[in-house]
Length: 331
Length: 279
Image (cartoon, rainbow over all chains, first blue to last red):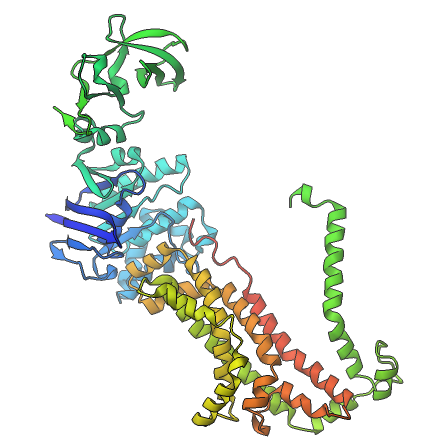
């Protein structure tokens, strides 16, 4: 069943068009990640789903019901904000139960939902504390708990991890993934971090300048990008883009190769000059130039490489992509 | 504290300057207080001497209590000040919320129009105000004063509060909307508590001029039953003879309530409740 449908959604602020004709279907139980560089409209898109912004044209359907004119609280959604947005003057218990009280749920239901959510997030010991007495990670859990107690049809996450430090971010990422499995709920998650997108998503929606560039599972997008933008956005280190003339005289297109698909080979077609070597332990990244263009190789394991050395490089078979000058993929 | 900034000489200079300022600011108050307890002769002979057994006298306070209805004047001043402050804060905050929160046509212009009042002294319109009050039959009522002071205080209140309200996190208000709070609940339950320090600032700024004002009580409400404290004290100041004991005693007593109000509001200035809301 379809949990959310966006059809031809556009949104403009004055003369600036932020969202252009967006069509997305989200199935029930799916984890969908909106990803894109800052300013691509992903947060605005989430806000239009939440009902915090009105769409300029098009339709938003939640559970196959048109909700264009429904206020946020009646849409059956819950949202987790980047800044947590906890009510500073309420303790954790009241923060989490405010929405249920507003919806006039019975005391028993409220108690039971609160107990369930706080057990799930190990917040039982903090229920009487105020937000200012909690650490960043705990605040984020309270914010998530505030969403869970409502049993929403749709969870909306707006860059929930960007205020956390690296270690906590990874833990919370796993917690969110677990939560998705436990609850089986439909979740929409906005981020600019492609790692979060790749690790969490069932389906990734790549946005740029208010347009959907490509929709698909993480591996589909990684292995089969529709255009140069998607190819360059997903993957870390990013895909190398080189003039195709390096392989073939007179070819005006761009050659794209993932760093892990390059390897040293004395008979290889490309000649690179090593400029920098990153030893990561598990991997070694070799950064160099190839006829003036920057190029990155990702070699498995610990490899010796000398800065300044000139070597020849090959591309793994069938692992090169070609993009026309306008950025579209040539298959 | 940073050790570079806490060297003893700097600290001494800083405290010295602050203490000096405090002394200068408190000196007139101190002189009024000590002289209110002295006999008339001693006030003029040794104005800076502390009252001793010989010069001590409560005659000023006795005169004030006997002549005129000072309890009523107190009450009038109090009603006018608290009433005006309540209206200024309520309407000022509501207007500020609308200006900072909602996009609508002419938002900018409306903000400028409301701020214009800061630059134009309301006393220029005294004659028109008096005519209006006569026409509406509000002359010699406390409402006349409350309305005028509210009008006088609103521009600055709107200006300061809308700046502060712009800083309240949008996420917080949106979280409230998603949780089903009405716009009124968001205003009263989320935004107002967060701008409490600004509200206190506005209250203190407005309170003292209202409490001390002589102009409007003299013109709009000079009747015995609506006299404010400042106006009431004027009976002791004559063209040829002034009862200084009574004037000083009345002024000393007038300081107290305003001090109490100030303490109440300045406690609100303490920040800290906002921490932990966002980030």
